[in-house]
Amino acid sequence: MTVVAAAGEPIFWEWVRILRRAELGFGEGKKRIGSNIVQHVGMMACTYGNPDGSRIRPGLKRLSRVCRLDQETVRRCLGRLRDLGLFRRTFEGSKTGRAGGKSDEYQLEIPEDLAERVAMLDPDEHELIVPEGVEPPPVRAPRTKRTAAPADGSPGAAPADEPVDNSPQEPPAAADAAPPGEEHPVLPPETPGAAPDNTRCSTAPPTHAPTNHLPAHNVPPYGAEVEGETAGRREPPAESDLPPPRVLPQSAMREFDPAEAYAAAIAELSRLPEFGHAWVDLARRELGEHTARRDLVIHAHALYAERRSA
Image 1: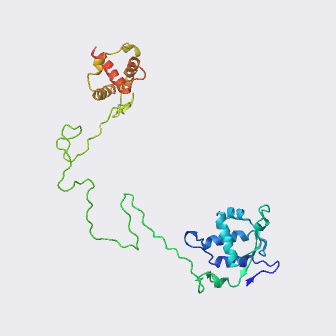
Image 2: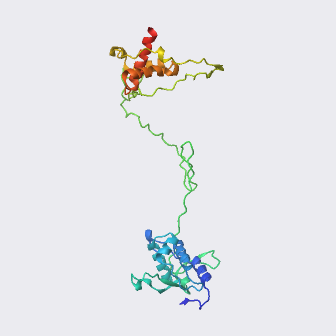
Image 3: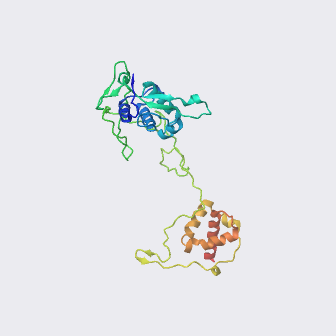
């Protein structure tokens, strides 16, 4: 038996009070829909009707958009409300055929036996009353609050409900420890970067090839203060002071190892005005625009060394 409002008598608020007290969740496992979802759909749907609970027809697509739920979930929630007697379908739009395109129409109703079929909060909404033979709603396990890890990377404190193991622990074995009876290989003394007393280095150090970028130097800029005194200004040499472009013999460039010659050239040119850029430009004119930076620096140093010795 259901309680239906008389013509013109508003039952909206009474129906809402029943809806918010009832436990309406249904389904099993991952397909279960919580009571809060069913209540949300019911509350949104009833706002599209009259105060007496009649002519509720929001349409499935519109109700899905308003509730921010997919249409299948909304359809199942409406079916749940119909099965419990809270919604009575007065018009079924699907019977008009695809050409009709009409929505279902519902009427609000308050079943008298609802409290015998579902769990409900008491009228004061303090205690959940589960009738005999009705399965109580699932209880969610509270989440354990863990302490955030300290900034130094050490593990955070254990939760209060977890026992703390204070027993002495064995120190962890080193990841690179050698098995018993075996020793790490020792690099021969002639290996680059291996000292004569090196007994635990098993990996040769990387070799760094010279790059095309000049390193930063601690040479003060022109006119800068050095220890409270203004440094003297050194002007770069004029173009007329530079020797005419020419090509040095290849034997002069092969006098040293390329890496050593490059390091020596960088150290020498860095003490010149503008870090020796004028000599590098001269070397670029002689060797060409597409010459590698290392060869340009070595050649510029050779030009400067020859000019200085002349």
